[in-house]
Length: 149
Image 1 (tube, helix red, strand yellow):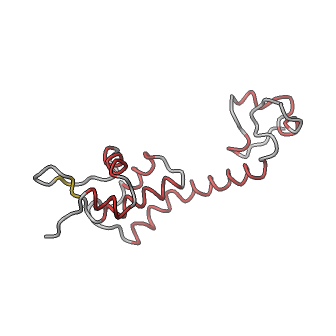
Image 2 (tube, rainbow, N blue to C red; image 1 turned 90 degrees about the horizontal axis):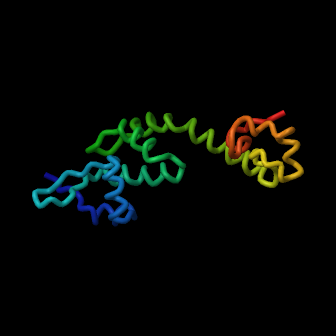
């Protein structure tokens, strides 16, 4: 029978701190077994799961979104290519939306962000008569791509 990995082994293999691994465990993203001594024993598949968590967070997914995605994967075996293909489709649209938002931000960086403050001369072009105010506080046009007018 193969022995699982200690939390220190997993930390070395993933580059994560032990405290980060414990945090992900506390959020239900990894579920190590316990040895008779009480120490955590991680499956080798957990290395891949933790690596996915790092990438997903860099893409902007929340812990809740990551938990939902990981909930579709087997817990104690390495995910297959088919597993990854299936889950990647769930967040592809989210990434496309994020890319579009970043592109809008880049293209409008030197102009109004749609906050309704009218502090820049160009805001009158993006937000005539402060119409964005009716949509609530905060930046409106960069996040959604919406235009007032």
